[in-house]
Length: 627
Image 1 (cartoon, helix red, strand yellow):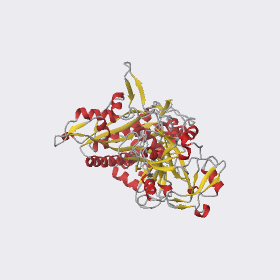
Image 2 (tube, rainbow, N blue to C red):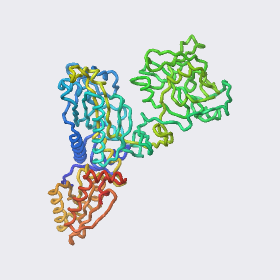
Image 3 (spheres, helix red, strand yellow):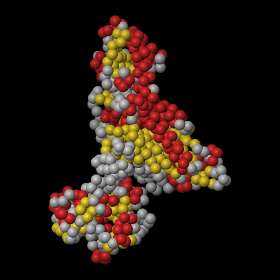
Image 4 (cartoon, rainbow, N blue to C red):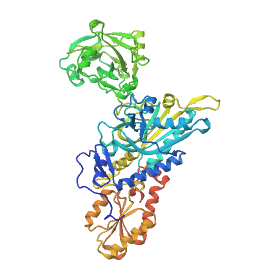
């Protein structure tokens, strides 16, 4: 490709809406252009990167035994109604009516379509297991599209779905897919960490995400991990053990329960100052609304934050939110910061909407005219509090020296309704080995799920087993964000001058730059090298533009071509300069040695065993690592 012909409109400045490096550089370097919020044109350079990533994904999925198909983007709502997700998916699902007034969706995922496909095409256990995948555009109407390709409304994704006769066979395939993902991301130059995750709208009992770890704000997810035993989970799923599990306020409050004045103390910070105590001695009560109609309380220690995904799962909600001021007044007869149950009666009862989930109910029998009763969940952090502080459900008042009832029935009721609801913290203890937990940020590039029979039961998708009985398919699903993977590579490989693509996914591997294209010696040598690279299967661009050398160098660095060959003043002596984009290593080589050297770099960067060894040694995967 001649640079004079390449459609890659560059920008000098970062676009004002671009918050993260990948969005900034992919726009400035002429890879993408935004046409609406969260919707982008992929220009020729970006399309080449995407095809490189897709090719790696296809090779590894095929190697793992999966088969490629293509399903429709437009899906009938009937399938979503049948699975039960039509009513619960949320506003991210793009819904519309066709000309015949039939409800349809633009697919964010394809569990419904593939389950229907399997049900129509797989009839016997002899046809199982099978793993089917596609690479296709997906659509989610994000509330706040941001971070460029990392969170858009339209994106490219590989989604695979496997069908099995047993949970054991699903688990076998799950491990096969996990290994395939590890290979895919390593080949793309990304060292990922597989972490436990919440299954979210996809569902299933077990799921993991593949995270590219980063300390930048482009990492949307917290990742907690243990260097001692290997435990790793995202912030929504991470469990931890508190180093100070038991906290006793006897030295501050004594052992006698009393009501104290706490004017203007509607948050933890002001309350700790007023009572001169640590936040860990406070039991705060959070009033949530389940599915817009059902209020409930969460008790958690004052120095901790509730992880709302854990809370949502504990009460089996489609959606939860904190109550507003009017709802606090209606359901708790209180105000923000003063919700508590001191003086309320503890009951063992399951209220509608919480059956099988929560059996602890507090009733305000001293306020009978308001008919106040609330289901209560306890985070494990509050069970070991002693002589602590809690709001009194009266504005400007708190109870101190409070203790949970000690009788056996009450203790059992409290323990039965205790969950892990807190967000883990760096420095907490690992739930597996008690070593210290670390925390970093991560970019999710892939996920895998053990769906079990969630969809096959809902959609009556069955096969005939060996014994002649009809059984539901046991399913798994496996996703990779193709566009997210490319963007994550930019987040990982860049510097102040631009992108530094790993060789396997670079749009072009080599940029040949004659300093003066009007110099016949330079041009002849540059053109010969370019032709030789093309003949050897090494993708290259030659900068034939009538521009200053500095402009050519800047564009080459901004666009991130892994190897730059400069044909300059020493061309008359047959000497060329080879510079690696990652690391900046420079070599002057006789022209005859340049192609063999470049080929060796490409072979190093695409040899999986060598690539894996470099990652284990902590070396980068871009071109600079191969020298």
